[in-house]
Length: 425
Image 1 (cartoon, rainbow, N blue to C red):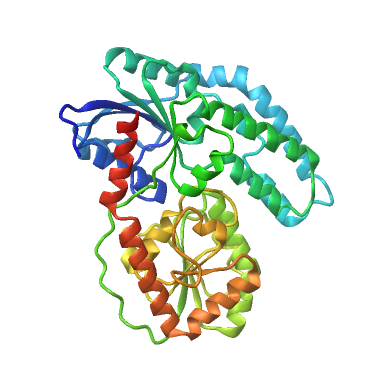
Image 2: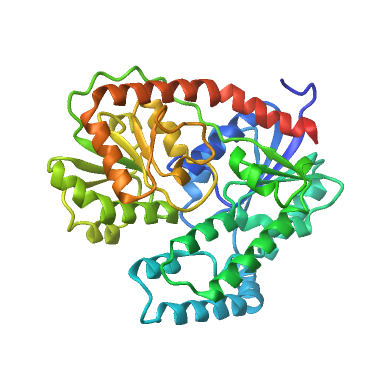
């Protein structure tokens, strides 16, 4: 349904939704690309060094979108250094003290080094970005302001109350931090204090928005414990899926496939856990099995895992169809929330998949019908082995999952769901 007269939607996002080299970028791009048909779109985002070419490419695609990129100035960096950094330094000091604990297990060290629990409660948007947003609002007739990602959550403090303000929550930070703490082998009371503080901080700021949008029904249900139901709205992300023919029967599984980059810590944690807890045991039974990792991973990560057999890093791949075939897809994600777009891609390419409960959370793919769930290393190994040995099971799961994908996650259906959000405000 198109509005007879287009309203104006101001989108303030933490990241440029281009190039299409990650699930988050693709999902943002696809949703906003469709919203252009229904709204006059104005977009504000931080433009980082090296992104200029990508921005120019996006401008050439979205010629009807008004862009106001925010470039960090020396003044803004100085403000951050003086007013925000002391708090971050203090937490960094505490973090270093914890990491020097002699009884800290290897996995604890890895999680704490990458966790955001030490900084989540000290967010503030750059002064220059606030001024940019205020100026755009003053110069344009804005009907809706849509803020995306946790990093910009506190922007609500600077937005006018006479315009409807929407926060799109791609991941509940406190759920991610809670799951990180659950994985630690050492109980540290101070981390529990930080978690409780950060959770209260996150919920209090979300409560100031007119509507909080989650990208999964599970996240919406979780937030309903703390926010009024009429403030919440579930709107899953969507992508245009390339048409994929039914795959030919595979007589022998030769590879396991993972999709995702190292920069997103849940991917980093999941890969480390899978390789160190599952891969060697799988290779003993299936010595010719290959583990294909698709996405951007550093040279250091590739060296780290070079001691393990048959692991191949593909890097970023333009055509997923060249790598998402003839194998079993794995989603060994143990932390985070939101919606894993990698599963949507895998199902579209007819891959049977094994996932943790966290990995498939927020999606309607059912255990033993659409996929196999496994929450410990032995279950994961057994589930992969079962799929390797049972061709009929692979075919049944992939066909069922494809049906669920086409019925529950059709592009038009999910776009319609998002459009209904603005109608209800």
